[in-house]
Length: 154
Image: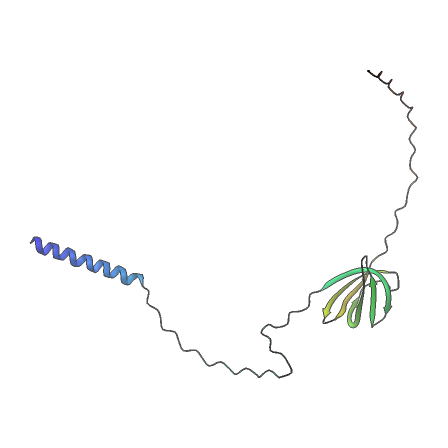
């Protein structure tokens, strides 16, 4: 009876180890067959093949005084450190105010190759100098007498 009991425990132990090993390795499902992809159109020889689509140009700003302006063609703006020329198109939004030489403007533009195309031109309001009020004079305080100097030690 003792031998039967030992054999039964050995069998149960082997079954336990075998089932734990099988539980650890998950079965991999079979991958379904992929559908055929539609044919891509051939890229013309004159156009380079690119993987990335072109991103929209980032809008940038430049502020300064108008140094030159031709309506519907171009605007030249002189900033603090440099002078820039922008192309003005029919799509350029012109803000309120008259664009003329010397007027302060803020130009929103985008780069298109070597060109800078103005998307919006806004005339900035001229800053008025603050009016100075006459300063109120306070009565002068009497001068205080200076303290006597200490005698020098030798």
